[in-house]
Image 1 (cartoon, rainbow, N blue to C red):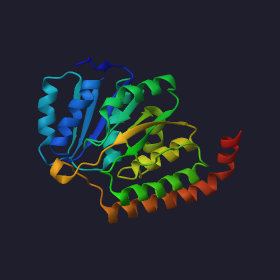
Image 2: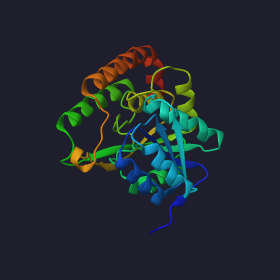
Image 3: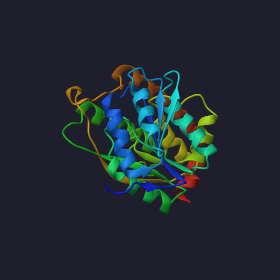
Image 4: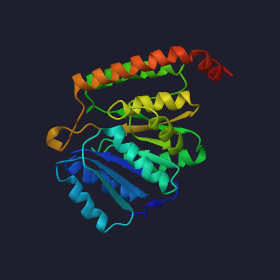
Length: 253
């Protein structure tokens, strides 16, 4: 097995909430590729915190941060970013704990980030037959909204959470607002970072949806989550109109 790449500037950050056994597998796969890997356990009640803490006892490249209550994906990411910044890290690759994201591409995404550290590296998903059609169609609508609100600045996919973020600008924009704490985190982060001049780099990546009998776990709730996303895009649209003159100058200068 190849030795995982070690870095003092780039880390892998995995927000995790009740992922079941897939969470353990995801962490092992990430650790096989990279050092360090941090997991932020977002108030999980499925025993995964205890299992991951046991793994970390024998693995200095793995750190587990346990939040006492479930606060949402964005809140878990921010907790990890705050600690990462305090320890001198400049970039974080985020990936989900449910096994959908390709750990084998961690190195390629980190390499792209190191070449352009001022940019964010966004995964552009390549779906197979496991992808629910309604999710794929909904993604196209989300992508259209993100592209309109950034004047087609280059966001290949607004929802795919396999990404490398520069930590400083992301922490800065999150610390000043109450949103971006749940499922709205990924698309709002991409749009607002574009507004701040952080350019996107898109790298294609396969994504797999696991069925329940395969150990798949999803916390996406079609009604509640879609309401959250619609409200987010309406807020962004209002701000987009106010920002439009500046965005036009920046986009086309």
